[in-house]
Length: 404
Image 1 (cartoon, rainbow, N blue to C red):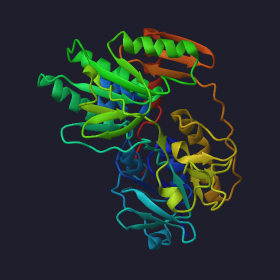
Image 2 (cartoon, rainbow, N blue to C red):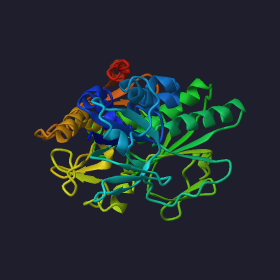
Image 3 (cartoon, rainbow, N blue to C red):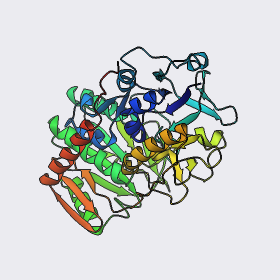
């Protein structure tokens, strides 16, 4: 009987496995990838897409084609239980459009949001994270509210801003959040407006406790200067509510959006993310954050046939920040352990948990801020370096040649 691996989500942690599906198929393992979109947008280049530096296709991995090519380019459906027992030596691969809503660990079954069920011998989760604003958000007609995840939201926001600016309307942009994502989105919103010929941008950043808290003081000064010298306004304080196209600070303050009012046309929510509710609802989240709890082997301690990586997991040996670098680091180990588990070999622990990694923030004006431990630098050469690294990462996962 052939075994079946289900990859839930085409996220960054699964890219390494998706690029090496031939190893699983060659071992007689069927692989099913379940994802809501045939594409994965690389988060590191998302802010650059907002400003127009990158076209959408430049930061897309074609996950569906990666699966189909591994299976010989054939149209794939989830291999049935009977086909798994049909005596074929080589495994089959299939892409299924959908999202997992529930995990039945006892029955070894994933239930999709539309009610379909897919059985597994091993399942891995690379479903990323979702925006988690700590205040109520009520959308209003004519005002766009865009969580910074999924990355595709940044393209929708870009088109919204472009249409308003091209119609000659003043565009009031509000960015809520004080982390690296909020800084990059604010900087690239300014870059987009500058490219559209807007001389006086109405961009406000509600930073909460401050911009880039936890970063070195020099990085914070550079980030604040980058935004303010281009016309952005930074406001500290906690947003309590968004309603009717307006934002309010806790305590009733309402001086958030450009022009001195609280109204906005386009609002970006960059207040942090959390794992989707899937794991908590399935009884698999053992920490308050709601991620799939995994051990050093990226494996669930409750159900050893469940694995995961990236933003959606809680790494029990050492809680990790939600940063894309960890999903990328975990990718090769996740792939190796999935194959080892399904072929009866020994698993290997994930050890690359260090925090002194290279961080590069796209300022949106052709410059970037570089951080490596206590070292902080800035300039156009930093953005050139970021561009080289990002494009090299995109090229590192080409479509596999169709199997014969």
